Length: 486
Image (cartoon, rainbow, N blue to C red):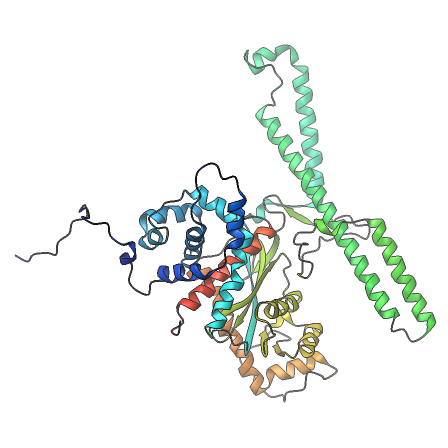
């Protein structure tokens, strides 16, 4: 008879094994541990050192960071799944050093140090640059809509909020009136062990929903006021800038009066810009609540009950409650050199902030940049011209069968749109612009399809931004791991 190789799954070891031998040489887990050893985690360690020294000792921060980076690299985002993998997956068990942090511990570590974890993006990007994976010869920009941790069916318009609050208030008042009318039957209604002051479940649900709607209405009204105030201030600033270039005193005085009127109107509205989601970074675009001239929300202005910072956006012909995630990708090795998250659906306003982020992260602008028609504006073209970026931004949606039949026109042409259109459709321009499809678009495919990041785990734009940064860090980490010269 044929004999088989020995198999003893319950065999105990005479000597303790080395967990390093559990994985083959060159495995991603080995690489993640090597990278984490080089990272500056002082921001995380300082928080841990400042905490109360009493109680259970925390897990080593480098182990927790390595666990999160490896999990994000292989498409595991749930803290419960990570905790489970430390028992069942050899690579997770090797990274954790055969420790098994509870899922609540992993979740608390991630949310407590989310900003510091998001900031690791620039450190890993620097490693990629030192490895020669970032050349900045050509950087392509694109955006994708990623679903928020909220349902679009949990959004309600301002007009409907007012109607629903009024209806719920009437229902609550009616229920209270009925309860008051039956005070004599308290024992029969509430039971002998209760004093009759407890809210019935039905009443509590209605009152709680009415309170939540009232809160959202106040937030929506405050944001609408802030949006109107910013709009008036921007109009005043434009009028002042135009007045300084006026051809005569009459025109200058008219523009100055217009600027002063806008300033007075802004003060009268009295909105506070700090209430706008993402206002901590005023350089990034944000969704302005649709508002009337007096600063009140328009009837169709919406707010989501679960994640109030997210917005309804279209992607692939469908509507999602989500965020607009932007990425600038270097052609050399598909390394992400800049990324950001906003709740503004159109892409046009993101071009300048993304390019500024590229310069901030790498020290300079790219030589060439490509972007689809969603990013076209004369202002973006002028920005590229002023900063020495050879830009190829499509001015319209194009058919695949279009043939190059126009010569390139310098970008300094007075008609910027015609100039850019001719530049992109010229034979050389078409070759350069075509690179965009295989430089930046596959990156989002890898995120969403390979690593299954299709929905944020956390709520609010303040948490969505570092979470997406962590996703992009994992992407760059994989590019660095696959670099043959590492």
